[in-house]
Structures are given as C-alpha cells and as structure tokens.
Image 1: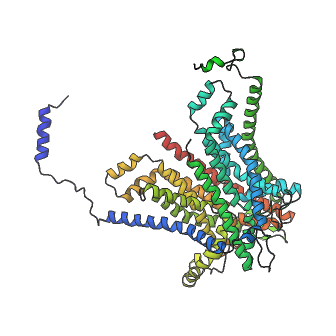
Image 2: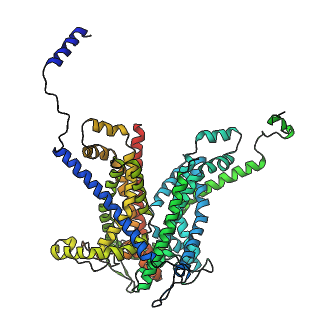
Length: 304
Length: 325
C-alpha cells in the first residue's frame, strides 16, 4: 500500500510551518560534561608527560655520573680491587660482546630456519601452531629461568661456569624474538612473488632461498638487531652461567665478565670508585643497546 | 643487428627442465632442517620444564607442598619455604601493574586519540619504546642512587603521619617494596602501552566518528566507546605486563631488600622468587640448589600460566575484529 505523494507533501509542509523547539546542538563551554572532558584530557597529558620523566632522569644521570668517568682507561683497564683507585671494565666489554656473539650465532640460524617452517613450509600444521604459541610464551619467559636451565644443563655437567654457558643462556632468550620477527617478515612477502618463482619451476627451497629470504631480509635483520639489543642488556641469566671474572677472557670454557654483572656487583659496594665505574659501565651498556635499537629502526624503515 | 636473446641458448641443454637430482636432495634436506629447527623449539621448551622439574624432584619429594606455605629459608638448618617470596612476587607485581597499567593505558589513549599531531605521537612512541630498551640493571642502579633518596623523605613523612595505615606501617630505610614496585612499573609500562596502542588502533575509524556524530565529548567517546571496544586487547596488555613483572629479576634483586618477610607495608623490605634465585644461586650448596630449583619451578608455573592466559585473551581480542571486517 502506498501513501499518495500529495499527502506526504502536505504533511511535510505542516511539519515545516509548525513552530518547534529544535534541540540545541551547541555545547555550552562550561557544561559539566565539557568540563569533565577537559579535566580528564589534561589528566592524560599530565600522565603521559609524567611517564616520560623516568627515561629522561635515567639518561641525565647516566650522562652526568657515567660520562664524567668515561675515558680510555675505563674502557680498557681491568676492574680495580676494593680500595684501588682507577681501573676500568675492558674485560667486561669483551665478555659481553663475546657472549652476545655466541648467542647470535646459535639463535639466528636456528630461529630463521624455524621461521621458514612456520611462515612458508607448513604454516597451518599442528607443529607450527604449537611452536608459534610457545615462541610467544617464551618472549615473556623470565630471563633468570634461562639461567637456571643452562646452569642445570651445562654448568653442572661441565663443572665450571663459562662464557659458553652464558652465550647459550642468552641464545635461549633471543630465539623467540628472532623466530617471531623472521616469521612475520617472511609472511609479508607477497604471494605473487612466490607464485612467480614457482611458475619459473623453482623448488620450494629455491623459492625460500632466492626469493623469500632476500625479500624479507630487512624485516629479519630488524628482529635480529632487537634480539641482540635485548640480549646485551640482559644480565639475570649470566649471574650463574658466566659468573664474573676479573681478567680478560682467554677461553670460552672459563668464567667471563660482562657489563651487566659488573654493574650489579659494583652497585652494592660501599666504594665511590666502584660506583662511578658502575655508572660508566651503565652508560656504555645503554649505548650498545641503543645502537642496536637504532640500527633496527633504520633497517626497519627501509622499503624494498 | 641485434640478436634475439633466445638465439644464444644452447638447445642441447635447455634451461627448462625438471629439477636435477641435486636440487631434489637440497630441497628435501633444507625442508628437513627447517622442520627440525621448528621441532627443536618445541623440544627446548619441554626440555626446560623437564630439566628444572627433574632437578627440583628431590626437593619436591622432601618438602612437598609445605614448601609453598612455609616462611623459613635457612640453608644451614635445611629449612626451605617460599611463601614470603611468592607473596613478594605477587604484591610487587600487582603494585607495579596498578601504576604501570594506569600510566600505560593513559599513554595508549594519549597516542591514539588525536591528542598529538601524528608525527609528534610517533616521536613520543619512540621515547616509550626506548624506555623498554634500558637494561634492568641500569634501572636498578638508578633506583638505588636516584629513586630511593628521593622516595625516603616522602615515605618517612607518610609513616610518621599515617603510620596507622598498614601500607605505611614501616619507615623506608633503604631498599624496599615501594622503590622496587615503582621501577617495576616503569619497566612494564612500555609493554602495557604498546599492546594497548595496538588494541586501540584496531578499532575501525568509523566507530569513533559515529561516537562524535552522536555528540559525545572527547572523553565520553574514549570512555564509553573506545575503551570498551578495545577492552579485551587492553586486558591482554595488562596480563602480559603482569607476566613481565613477575619474572623481572635484576632491578628487583637490587631494590627490594631481599628480606624474607610478609608485610603489607610499602616501605618494608621484601623478596621475590626471581630475586631469591639471583641472590642465592651463585653460592648455594647442593641441597639448597634443589630447593632453589623447586622455587624456579614455582616461578615457571606462575609465569607460564599468566602469559598463556594473556595470549589467549589477545587472540580472542584480535579474532573479534577479524570477524567484524
């Protein structure tokens, strides 16, 4: 059934001609709602600015307390004993670099291969789903438990704390970061590129090695850099795998110094010299971590 | 005269053809290695649980569940109990979650709800992400020499004037729960903020437009529309942040005071499971190592449950939006 148009038109005319109270669509500036909104907006601003205070405070103290002590001697000399002046943490820098290097050598190839399986070979298999979930769980894994694990597996059997054990413990922590980043980078490679390669008659391995990995390389590298930055700053797993050493590293099967453990040990000492060194070591450690973070950002920003 | 590229092809060995025997071998072995690597991660996790559990077994059979409810930790007397550590772990993490959660969500709102020009928001986001890059020990050092001296007069004033309130029941002499929880809050803030930002970004733009179109103020749009829509993502952010806090070690070992007591006071020293492992492990005798392995197992169980719960909530949150699109 339809209403004649003339009826609608007359109704509309009536509507237009009757004087009606239109709702006021302007918001009064001092209305309670508006005041509340403004107040909470201001609160958010304060909260956000307040949250960045610690970062600036940390950076400021690092530069002031650590920067004043940073010189060639601190970067190369061995840690001083209790009442000695001077000294440095050259061995700790070497130890950190060596152990992060070992961890990278273990976790990066393993992580990328696992990611190949997760992203390309069989993304929907039960194994892939399980491993993906476990990798995510492992990113929230307390780092000290990696130390406990490696202590039980390596330190107990080798009967000595070692740089090698420290490296393996860090590798356990780097692995999930590398796997997840590499998987994501490979999954983003456009399907038509892979299809084109298959169309050329490539085997799956050739597609992966010649198309997927080179195309996803920047994303993978970003993940690797972030993992390295995380491992370099991580100290908990080194506490009872690498322990500490007052000398330069001579072999991988002996205890090794690291910047993080040096800071931990020196922070509790009642000597000014050691505390100054702890600040300087913190500055160096933060610089190392930031360099890798910034590298990750620069690489990640590049478009292919 | 330009020769056509195809003219130069040696027809006797055409470029096209089935993969050679070498290709087959390479393909099979590469895929095998990739499968093996993925399986290795699964094996690693099982091995971690098995190894820590296995090493804890003697302690489990000796102390049983009483280990979890006993308060004494005395290596000489062979008494081990981790109730104070469980309490300290949960209490410090909850306090950190309260603070880090409020600020983390505030930052997520700040970054996603048009408070800043998008380029400025990107800069601010980088600042928050850099906060996550600062190593735990550095926060510990900063806590000892900057935060505790700042906190001490405030804490002692609170204790002097409101000492009757259980939270302020003791004075802050040095390390204690309050500085530890504050540093912990700073450390989980980037986690909470970045996952919440992702959750808020997932909301289709038209939802916000519809809210503003209904005449809401900015704050009504945020509280009544944006936050409820992103609620499961934000919940996941909080749970995962809580998981981070539970396992955090070095800063806590430096700031919490390593004292095995159960107290509601924010200024009393306390201890956590991770800090117990960090401080006792290097010098532990075999019997104590077994007990520490039991404690490690408890920490592993708590964090695995919390993280798995967080991931499950996050999966649910993502799926909700995928279904709507």
